[in-house]
Image (cartoon, rainbow, N blue to C red):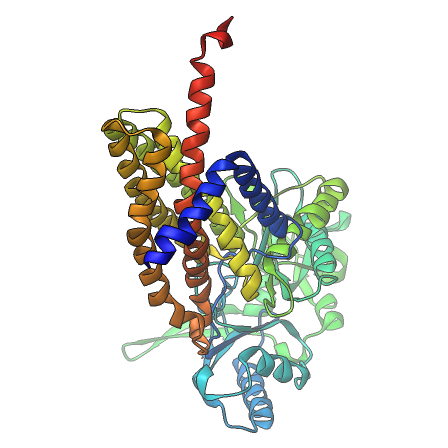
Length: 529
């Protein structure tokens, strides 16, 4: 330690101070290179990666009106196909849900009824199996032949982290009709299908039951028919009419006459005789025009807007979700604006990401402001707080470089760890600067104060950094699946501290010397002439 302090470190420090502007320039260049790794996607950002789950969630729906027994048939079929591919017995159990969707699958629709159902598949722990969850899902889906009448079918891995779907595009308008919104939705879905790694694409505007619309003919209007009268007659054809009531003991018995609906078809319906208001029997075909239609089963409104949500999932193993969202914003949503003239916004995880970044930005500026005020008050100086805090952006050199070396993406945990790293580095810098500042106040010249102060704080700074690095290093070599989620945080602090230690010991003295040069220059009387 003595050799390091009095020989190696001292020589390197004196050389750095002698060439202080070159040292500062090299630091700036390293920072630019680090940011270029982000700019050109050598190091990517992924907001919130999820550790591998052992739960698979299935949602499916048929056309409204489908019988419940149809649901049980498809559940048994899916369970059978899953068992066929489960050669290594990694499926622990399956559960069936009928009548409502599974909320945990991050769906955007809220349909209920016998035509809606789901399935939960529980697997063994990821550490106890070789086949990954996404591989099982892919193999299962390839082995399934979807039955006729199925309107939606999704198989998803349950994800942790913030709520919402990977892709959730909200298309809305105050004036456009639902058909235009549906066309826009179909356009967006077709564009999403072209993107690698995007699956389970759908919207929340499902087609409803098939309908028959009735309108009065001119003859019906001449016979004094109106819409209410016609509606009552049509209701009577299907629901029947009450013809009499009588009592049997204390019980009231009602006699209802109904048509045989099993034998009912378009021809028999058209030939059905209807009693007109003036007492004549007229065939249904002469008083009503029929038109088949199929409308939407749900209509979403939000803050006065008609709104449709297009959702999808991103396979984070194949692609980076942040790259996909950039592609969606730059290309797909621009085309949507140009072709359909509709408003849009991003919900789901993109919305959570935007809110999180906004909160972190406000919190970061607030923290910097408070730190500056405290340091300025303690040191009674405007410059010294800047010299201490100037090290913060340069810590990103080690952070970005560490992620590049290890091959990990920067995540939200990396950003949170940067706040912690900044605290450690600022603490070391305060100790360094305060020691130098105290020596200057005793009358020692600034060069001697900087060199002596840096030498004296070498042991304390290195011990702080090395103990923290030693505590987090085992996490970097942890091989469990769940540990991969925490590694970006450890990478940020470990590699950030490795480089920041050098910054505190070398960069802070260099900044103090540059500050002294600026001070001499500004307060030189020749400068103001």
